[in-house]
Image 1 (cartoon, rainbow, N blue to C red):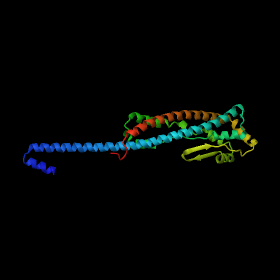
Image 2: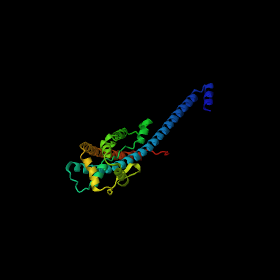
Image 3: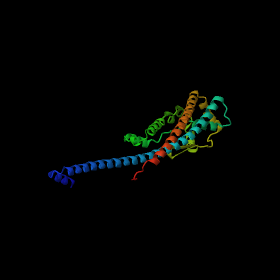
Image 4: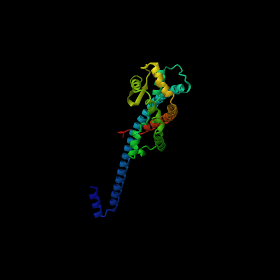
Length: 260
């Protein structure tokens, strides 16, 4: 209809009307582009909001996992300290030979920690990190996930392999069944349990372990690594907590999907 009107104005050389029609067309195109840009921006903001909510859930999962790992590593370290003290001083500090044997086994346990980075990796692989407009937060998030990849949090020590090569398999099977539990989300527990052995039997195994200098050196190294892992975990908790706080503000300020 507009085109026919413009043609009519040209035929009649109605230049003022032609000028008005041209302005109307330009304004229409401009408004259309602006509306399209506004809708696109709103859609990006809504998608960013959805990603931020998911990142918040990932950080919550990390905070819970960090606390679980710290608790487990503390138990592993306590067992390792008991075993090393006995090897170095001969003082069992009231522990039975079974207690010491159990300590040497449980101090070989590992509880690996990996950051929950599925959402962040999805953003990176899709090239959509730019949806997070806050550059400082985006950089802090990237640094957090890089920091969480420290090998001390996922190491499997040589001591683990070697001490389990010394302890008889039937004893290890007993420990797995009666002195250990594992649940979903990699939640592990080391449990108190009665001895399946006579003290003399346990003492034979304990003495073989404690008199192996190479094995005790590996245990000493593993206890040092446990200490480092704890330090890293506390730093991770601090970073995740700060990010979570900033994220809450960003989520509150961002439009949700479906909002006009």
